Each structure stands twice: as structure tokens, then as C-alpha cells.
Image: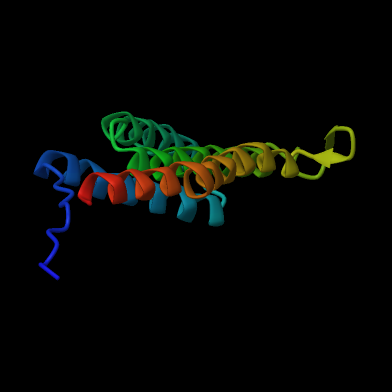
Length: 136
């Protein structure tokens, strides 16, 4: 069998720097949440989510990257909402049916999970089948 050439995923340095800053913002947000530093936690939520959305937008042409980056953006949304519910004291309050403020974070968590489920159950098998037919 001839060796196969694996497709490379190359990230421009300016994009990589933004992704690295994204991790810094995310950590500062979560540390602030843990220490109940409301102002800093809320302030860090904005750039953390904004950069996640920018990263998803930049990877929109690569279905695998887009799916994972959208899941991350929804994860950060859920995480930020949960943080806000605790900061403003409605985390244990019933806000809809039997769900508390904190549990409402399940909505964006599930959206992210559904995106990944769709990718792995539908899109990825389709990509594998397509690659098999084009390389034969």
C-alpha cells in the first residue's frame, strides 16, 4: 500500500495568538466566578464568548472544526449563564416549569451536544464515505 498523505490543518499565527488569549480570558472568567469577583467574571465573559464566535466563524468552511467550535461557543454561553445565575442569585429560583435558573444552562449545553452528535452521527460518516469513493 502506498503511504497516504494526511491533510494538514494550518492555523495562521495571528489566529493562534487569538485562540491562546481566548484560553486566558476563559480561565480568568472561571477563576473570577470561583472567587465571586462579579465585575471581572462578567467582564471576561464578553471577550471569551466573542472570541469563541470569531473562531467558529473563521472555521466555518471546515465542518469538523465548525462543529467543535460552535459546541465550544454554546458551552461558554451555558457556562456564562450559569455564572450569571449564581452572581445574581437566581440559580436556585424556579424560572420555568420545574427548572431553576442554573438548570436553564442546559439549553445551550444541549445545543452544543446536539451539534456534535449531528457531526459524528451524520456529517462525519458522510465525509468518510465521500473520501472512500474519491480515493479509489
